[in-house]
Every structure is written in C-alpha cells, then in structure tokens.
Length: 99
Image (cartoon, helix red, strand yellow):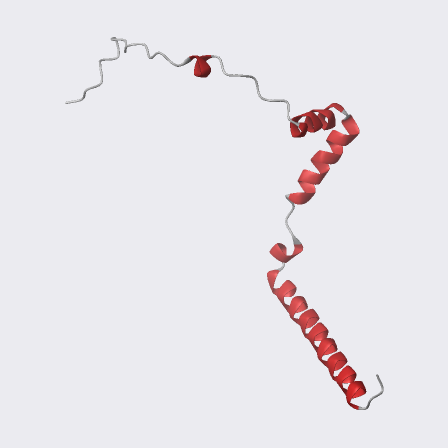
C-alpha cells in the first residue's frame, strides 16, 4: 500500500527557515562587478561572446586526428634530432678544448 495521500487531500505545510524563505542577495564581489561592467559596455560584451565562441570551437586536431598525429611526430622527430646533434656538437667542442 502506498503511504502518499490521495490527490484531493493536502499535505501539511512545511515551515522553512527564514534564511531559505528570504535569502540574502548575492554578494557584490569584484568578479561580479567586473562582469556587470563588461556586460554594460557593448564592444566588451561582443568581445566576450567572440572569445567564448573561439574557445568552444572544434580544434584542427579534433577534425583531422591522423594528419595531426603525423605532423606532430615529424615535428618531435626534427626537434629531438636537432637537440641530439647540438649536444654532440657541444660535446665535441668541449673535448677538443675549443670552448
């Protein structure tokens, strides 16, 4: 058997605490003031919307994962080779007492 009352009967009123019935207004923090200022200046509000749209765009690496992986591998291989060759060059200079 269900313990819920029939739909025509009213449930007893729940007394909420005062802070829940009349909450304080939100505090005016520096962030809220700055956000209100940006919203109040149309060019800044438009720039904020453009920034949000740019941030939520689909990245190139998400659209072309295979190409991105190949290019990343090549870049890493070139940089690693340059570092190893540079280190060997410096080691050679040090062993020949040129540095």
